[in-house]
Image 1 (cartoon, rainbow, N blue to C red):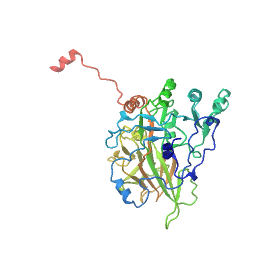
Image 2: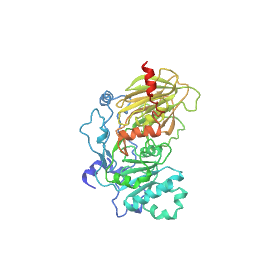
Image 3: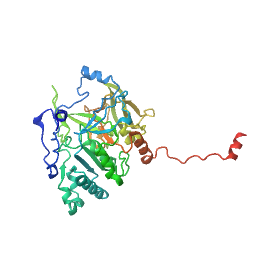
Image 4: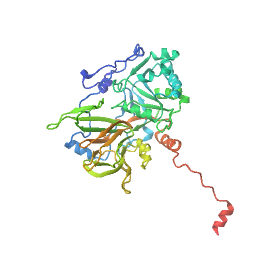
Length: 441
């Protein structure tokens, strides 16, 4: 590896580095992947993490623009800088994938327990290993599928795989790009595996909806070859950086790789968990029959109290998911914004709003709340929120670089038409000449 690359990707503490325990014969006689670093339990990079904001943090909240996203994705991918960027909005036509070095490793994510994906998965892996000489990373539970484990013709290919386990192994500096086979959930899952820089993601539509998966598998060989050669456009899908701070409670059995223990001066220990969210953060009333009652703060100021079934805080990518079903507008992923959408509010005037990407949101249970609330992140990691707990949400500087089929604009409108049937109706017939003459009189 070149010195410039080492300077960019070497972890701060060499003592905290560990290699993956599950390597493979596929790494032999090839380019050795960069050693991964385990998730640190120290205080991470944050835009505003303290209860009393410092001067620098206070200045950040005065900016309406979101943080400038990183333009390096994984060990080898980057995006050409656009000198004509205006107001932190990247020109969609200039967002092109660029490789610093030819990619050598790929993570293949397959929808679990889907028999229809077994043959495409095998074909893709054989193509990548035998024709493209790639190092293929696969999650261990994918290979535990009996249909794959008992396939004798696939044994030789599996020997070249590198396996990993979610929440145990960090592959962030080992994977050059990602291929997803399935629906939109596979892309969300890929995002959850990377808490910082995300490698470019190529998603094939083999699921039910496919709003975020623009590629068809019929011509996968030519399409994958174009990506490896760097001939592809990308769209940066912004993510939300979420910090959940929980007051210490007895009999707590929370086990999470994102857990950070912080000690207060005169208080008992508090648990802090951090997440990168691609679609939305949902706070709801859970199993309780009472309304949820949560306070919503923007840059430290209380702006409203949400009384209803809950509230959705989403990215522009998430605007076409749960938020649009709750009445929000659909926003193109290139627009820097955060959406706030109430779920069945007990007020006819509480409409969805869009706020700048640079603000900091905080959600806390109101003092008058009759019950606890529940929070989930892209539909996962669901947990209870009680009095004294807080959820802080800002725009992350680590977006998901999603590879486009054509370009960011055409792909988005194509998804609106094909998946959501946006503005689809029977066309009005034109007037005949006789009807036109009657109207003139």
